[in-house]
Image (cartoon, rainbow, N blue to C red; front, side):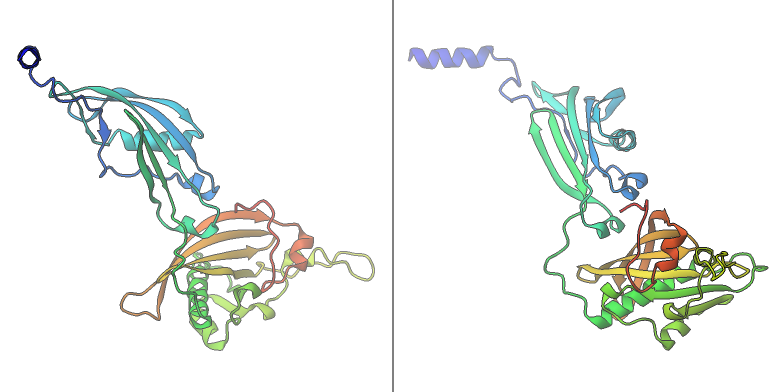
Length: 321
C-alpha cells in the first residue's frame, strides 16, 4: 500500500507533459538535395561539409543560424548553405511543446571512381542519425547496375553514331562567311564497333560541313609544322582552318536503357573531352537520345598531334578525368 501511495504522489506532482521524452529537431526527408557544384563534378572531386544549424520552433533555420564547422571546399559550403536555408525540420519538443534546438548536419558529396556516372543526376546514397542532434546525408551516384544487359555490337554502333551526330551538330559554323568546315569522325578500336560507313556519313552530313571518315582525314596544320623536309626546313601547313576530329572513346552500359559515352573533339593541338548520356527511347527502342557535357580539355605538343591516330589511342595531357 505504501508503494502505491508513493507512486500516486509522484504522478500528482509531475508537471503536465513531463512524461513525454524530449525529442531533437531533425530534417524532413522530403527536403531538396544540395546541388553538386558543376566545377566539382568537372574536376571529379567530392568532400564533406559539417554545419551547425539553429532550428526554431516552427521548423525553420533561424536567420544567421547556420555555422560551417568543417568544409573540404568553399563550393561545397555554398551549396550546403543554399540548400539548408530552404529546408524544413521537424522541430524539437520538450514538455509537449515545440522548442528551438541546435543540431549538426553533415553533407557528403561523393564522387565515384567510374567516369561515366557524372552525366547522371546525384541521388541520396545514405541518410542517418549519427547521434542525437547530429545527422548525416550522403549524395552522389550509385554503382552501375550489375544486372543491366551488356550492349551488343548493333546497340553500341547505334549509340556511337547518335553521339557523333550530337557532337558533329555542335561544329556547324555560326558565321556564314566562313568556308566549309572539314570534320573527321571515328571510333576508338577499344569500342569494338565498326567505323562509320557511307550511310552513317550521310546521316552525319550538315550544311557547310564536309564529314569524312577518320582514315581519309587530311593532316592538320599543327601536325605538318612538326614535319621537317629533306633539306632540314620545316614544311609549311596548308592554308585555311585545321580539320576537326570527333572520336568516340568508350561506350558502356550503365543500367537498362541507359549508356554512358566518352568522346573527344580534337582541333589543332587542343582536345575537348565529353561525357554523354544515351537513353533508349521509350516508344522507339532502336533510337537513343544523347546529351553531352564537357568534362575536360587538354593541349598536346605538335609532335603528339602528328603521331596520333584518330581511331587509336589518344594521349591526354592536362585533361580532367
